[in-house]
Amino acid sequence: MNFEFKAISKSNREMAHILFLIVLHQLLGRVCCRIWVTQPENGVNAVVGRNITLSCQIHSDTRDEILQCRALWYVKELTKWREVGDLLLLRARFLKAYNGTTTNTTLTITELTLNDTNTYYCTLMCQINRSRKQYHGNGTKVNVQDHQFLGSSIPSTSLSALPDAESDNATEDGLLLVPFFFLLSLKLVIAIAIGTFSFMCRHSQRINYKKK
Image (spheres, one colour):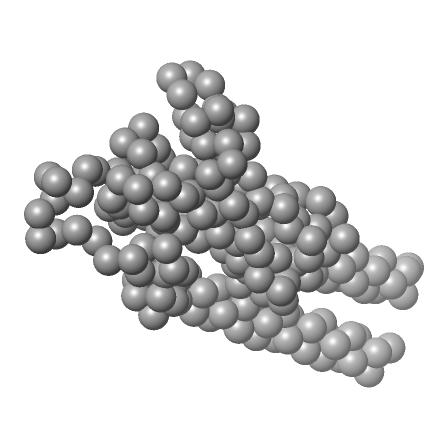
């Protein structure tokens, strides 16, 4: 009778250990593997008649396989979203481009007019770990002005180039380091907890075995 009770107790401990590992795996899957899209959020001033290029990039805090991204750019008109390609005002005046991995895309608008003033939102539809998913950016505000009202503050032609990774994205990357290191610390604590729990279970099994 005592032997049967010990066998049942051992089985219950092993089952609890397995359930504990499953729950931890699910929690790690939720707090990690974050994927997000960034756009320049400070707004851009532009001049009538010139060109402007907006960037959009997808990021991951793990080694997710991100391939075959397709960018869709939108503007919001009242309560309806309109794709840039469907706007008569912008037809034949915009161009989408991608880098080699398609994770970084740009939208170039040529021969700007005052009516191009708007907030442009980027959506990236990508194949992520063999699944098709889409992620949305927070939008970039473009303010187009007539050069006669700008005086000496006319922006240079550098607006048509990609944003400097060390300028626009520096603040975002710095802020992203905080949750990233927090997740690493959380992973370390959980790994130590799992190791300690496993050691205690094995040690308890050895004690029970010696008692038999």
